[in-house]
Amino acid sequence: MERRWISIREASEYLSLHEITVRRLVDRGEIPASRIGHSVRVDLRRLQDFLERQEQEIAPVQRQPRR
Image (cartoon, rainbow, N blue to C red; front, side):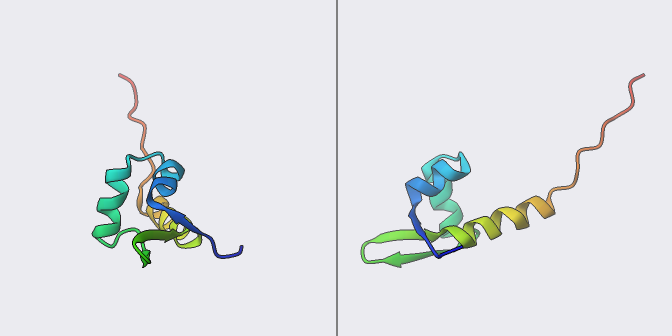
């Protein structure tokens, strides 16, 4: 996969999250990003790595038996 930089807006659409939420995740360092000129860009490959890590951390939902 070639390296591709996307904007915060594009990252929010990709993640189906509000743009402010993505900015907060970037500010906390949870989503890796770089400043390019006056804008912040997210490396799509690193964003996908972030999603895979999040997926691994989520425990599968256990169904409770019906009574």
